[in-house]
Structures are given as structure tokens and as C-alpha cells.
Length: 454
Image 1: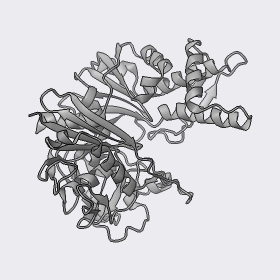
Image 2 (image 1 turned 30 degrees about the vertical axis):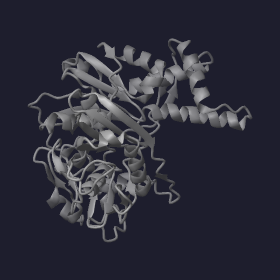
Image 3 (image 1 turned 60 degrees about the vertical axis):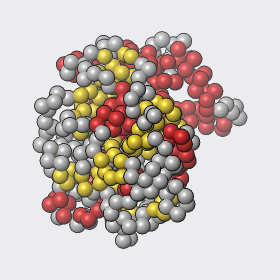
Image 4 (image 1 turned 180 degrees about the vertical axis):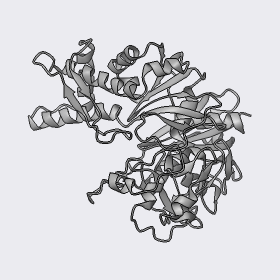
């Protein structure tokens, strides 16, 4: 009888569930559903929150769409999800299992996501320097907790994927892997410890700091039947979606992975004996994320990727609507790609950093070298796609990849998959060969991790 690993990714915009055959390591079934959980912000403080109840309801629907006869033979469950964010809950009553074999969020706050912008630069600069190689930015869990906020009488805090693990296992608190802890800030990845002494001096509620367990290790076992998965099924401690997506497609240590979806990331594996710096390097465009077995990934994580192209399409759609010439976004997107394919190069220069970057938040977008001959849709779209690649390679130059021994680029992500112009610019940007078809998939990656380690 076949056995399966259930991999779940609680993403920023959607939930994905996959069943991985534990012997063949092939995907036996999968489903993905948008969460539509964003909460509109009318406060004017740049808050980015999501409805926890809606996220959990979507998770239940997604898992419920998988074949029940296969769910009954799940041998372990792995979770990944959006990093940096935080929600709060009451450990003893954080969910309700009374509605059959699925749970409903209860006594939990809304999810404050990684996109949250309420922590201003002045507030962040007022915080003590962490004992870590990683800087703290707005949207990071520890910074969000320190922001003046009424926390009620919550007894636990974690990322959204940590919350799901805690509810599935009926845990008294929250357990967290170094991958998610590092994304919160004020966590030392060398000692795998929170900066408790530093945080205590700020008035931080230390009881909300999760207990850390190794990435790839177990958090507990399911406390109830869940969509046919028997009670007592092992559940892995939740991991970062970025690390799991890399795990799903980096087949050799000489690979670099370029993912362009909503945002963009370029990463490669550091040598096994690499040790990160002793203190944050806030002006550096490259960060070192904890991976597995005390190893690290060198990461250029850009806030500007497919979202820039989406903003461009939204802008044109709005302009056309004002001019009385409406065209739906999918059709407009297709026309833009076609026009750019007919324009092989453009001397127009677009710096697409409309969201800034974490290492340089005040550097916003620019358009330069404008002339009467380069304002066609083809020119502008080609220049925009080139600008997305130019930005990510400015953060991690191709020469650095060569020095690190990178022999090929693995391209993945929804923006690359649907945009041939973007793929052409990728192939021009790197001297290494670029391969596609090994799409980074966090849900598959977390299942592969458990398959390899449990």
C-alpha cells in the first residue's frame, strides 16, 4: 500500500496542498485555492493584515479536495508558509475541533503579514541592534510585536504556518524552526537562540517567543482525525516557504535558483563551513538565510518582481478605462508581451523599484533615457522586463555567482512561466545556462524534506 507525505504551503495569496508518494517522490495529487483573506486598511498606518479564520477555512477546503483514500495513508504532514509575519492566539483554546474532522480558528488575532509597513524607519532605528547577522525590518515578527499594540491576553505567537502546526498537534504553545525564527529578527542562527536579554530591555513580552526546534524536525502528532488523516500522524515543525521552494528545485549545490513570482529572489548555497557575519549588514543587498543542517543560502531578495509588471498592467487598465477604451487585464497583458517580443531591445531605461528594497527603502522607481523613438508599448514593456532583471543582478552580480562556482541558473516562478520576454532577459543577464521546468514549489519542497528526513 502506497504511503504519502502531505505538504502544505500557507502562502500570501493562496493555499497549496500536495500528496507526495513517499517511495517514488512524485506528486500523486495537488490542489491550490486563493485565500482572498486581505483586510483593507483604512487606518492610514500602512497595515497589512489577513483574516485568520478565512485562511484556515481555505486550508480545510484545499485539503478536503485531495483524494480521501490517499489521505487515509498519509504518514506525516509538513507545513511551510509566508515568513516574517505574526499572529497571536490563546494556546489552550486557539481553535475549535467540534465541526467534524477539521478545525476552525478561534481566540486568535488577524495575521499581520510580512508586507506590513507600520513600523516606520524612525521606530526601527530606535530599536537596539540585534545579536544576529540579520537586520530587522518592518513586517518582521519581533518588530511588529514591539510596535505599540494592544495584545489582549494572548499566550502564544508565531507565523501562520506555526499556528496551523500548533492547532493540529494541540500544543500548549508555539514551536518554531530557525528558518522562521530568523525571519522574525532578534534571533541568532549560530547559537539558535533568541536575543532574550536584548528584547527584555525593550519591554518585549518574552512569553510570546516560540520554542525553537531543528528545521526538518518534528513538532508533534495530530491530536484528532483530520480529513481522514488518522490522529497520531507526525507533524513536522513549520519551515519557511523560501527554503522549501529552493529545496524543491535545487538539485545540485552548484545551482543558483532564480524565482520571479510576486517578488523576486536569486539564491545559491554557501559552503558547508560558512559562518555568517557577527552583526547585521543593513546596507547589504545579500542576506544569508538558514537552510538545513546548519548551512546557509546567500539570497538577494527583491521586493520588486512580478508585482511591478502587475502594477504596470493595472495602471494601463485604469488609464484606458478613464479614456473609455476598456480592455481586461489578461488580454492587455498578452498584447504587451506580443509587442515586446517584436521589440528585441530598448534603449529606454526603467528602474522598477517602486516598492524600494529592504537594503535601500528610499530608492524608488525611475524611467530615464526617454526619447521620442522609444515610447512604444514594445519599448516600455521590454525595458520594464529588462529592469526587473537588472535590479536583481545589481543585488547579486553574475560575477559573484561565477566566483561561488554556480554552473547553471534554475529559473522558476509564475512571472517567468507566463512571460517569454522576462525569460529572454534572464538568459541575457547570466553567462551560465538557464534551465526551466523545475518550478520551485514550497508545498512539494516541504514534503520532500520530510520524505528525506523522517
